[in-house]
Image 1 (cartoon, rainbow, N blue to C red):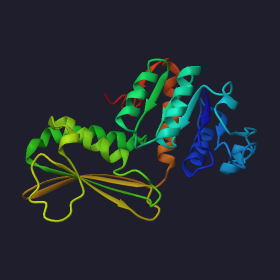
Image 2 (cartoon, rainbow, N blue to C red):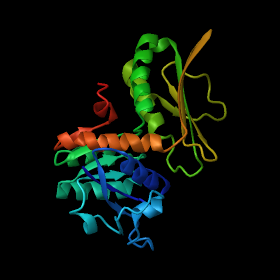
Image 3 (spheres, one colour):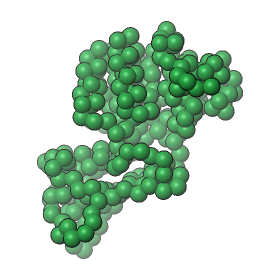
Image 4 (tube, rainbow, N blue to C red):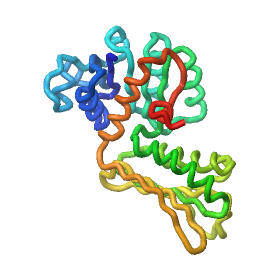
Length: 266
């Protein structure tokens, strides 16, 4: 599979470049930066610190349209939607790790997936996706007798809140309990809010320093607490998952998938 990395000059982009170069079965053949970037034309391998790859940074997908089979995109929602439209129109597959998508943007994902293969996940870590599976089992076993709170911590630069992973964890728990997360989610508490209801799922968000990503789901009842925690110390965790997804898409021409599909956790 010929892979292109979107936003290759960013922190995640550089990590993705490194991950692709380390993996078997994929080849980094294209990469992009912002259209007005002074880095256009530079070698992406030298930028990422992995050595010269003879792959020049481009300013748009149109410039590399013939050079890749699958695009990996961890950028911003609006940019990702534009790239998704481009990939669907040109028969390119796409792996999306961008978070903070609206319902309309997720609907656009589904529409484009009717034309090409799209893998979208709020978190591509194998460990986190195992946590989703575990959370479903734990929630079904405990039922409605336990309060549920989700605490997440990320670096100071993260722009969306709560994290996409935290929301996915909430969706896993809510689905297992037969609840609608949009109706039962509570995002932070302040003032005289009264006692918590049994149905609500609380979210607490912390932004500080350079934390890559910590997530804890707390199930609490009188007399005991159960905590399911995942801590990421390197972006390489997510990058390796994205590369794994890219290889997995090779056998799929169209459809909308997530990491549960890639890892056969359904």
